[in-house]
Length: 138
Ligand code: CO
Image (cartoon, rainbow, N blue to C red; front, side):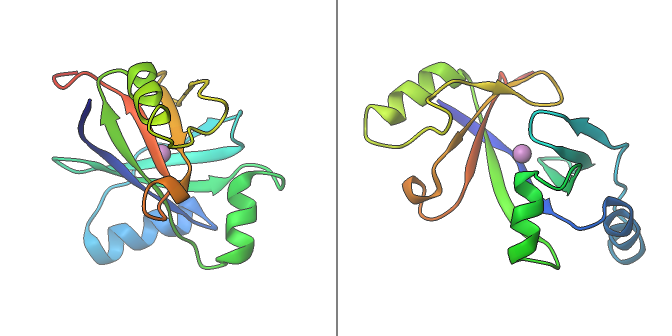
């Protein structure tokens, strides 16, 4: 079951520059960065009362985010993320209705240790969607 919106993720050429701009213009605080080695990205978050903004900077040249930035040099929305109560159950449920779960339906883990999966953009109205397992009160 889908339980909420976790975050909207923006690919940026520079986390430091993005954080500076969000603070200067919008008064938003960007938290400390962490690295996801598997995906080759450096991540930082803005915590809002009901969701987060995720900022992603490539951590190495062959990162998928580096490829995204080649096409969108100024950065841009890369994906959004829905919370689900059970990644395996939701993945299996949507796959049974023809949606492609990337990575053979094998869930990964994000930098916070939560179980995640990605849905093919063509199977969600053109948007790349991440599913993140989180209990409603978690
Ligand atoms: Co994300």
